[in-house]
Image 1: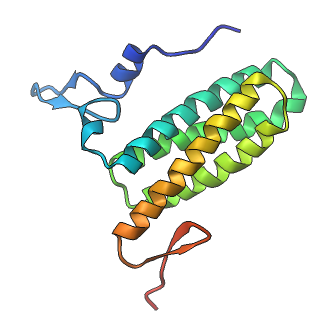
Image 2: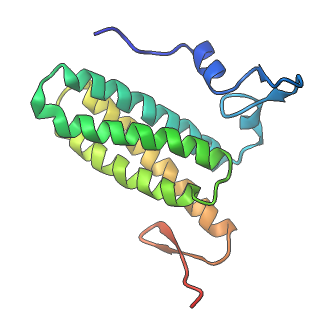
Length: 165
C-alpha cells in the first residue's frame, strides 16, 4: 500500500499557514505564527492531536491489509483520528466544548492504545506510543485549564463542571 504521508509544506497549507483572505490579511492557525502565542500545554496538546490523527489513520490503513481480525483496531483508530482532528479545531479556537471533547479524545485514545498494544505489528506499536503521549498531553492541558478556570473540580484527573444547584 502506498505511503499516505503528507509533506510539511502540504500540512502548512492545509492548516491555513500562509493563507490570505480576500482582503489580503494573513490568517494563521496551528502550524503557523499562531503557535507562538499558545501556552505550552495547549501547543503540545494541539500537536499531539494532529499526530494522533495522522498515525491512527495510517495504522487503520495498514490494519485493513491484515484481515478482519483487525476490525476493532481499525474502528478505534478511525474514531481517534476523527476526534483528534476535531479537538485540534475546537481547542485552537477556545470552544466551550473543547475540554469536554478533549476528555472524550483521551478516553478513546486510551482504549485505542490498549487495543493496539495487543498486536505486535510495528504500526500498531507506533500508534500506541503516539497515543500514550497524546493522552498524557491532553490530561496536562485539562489540568492546566482546570487550574485557570473557576468552578471546575478534578475527578480522577478529569475536569468536571460543578453543579450550580
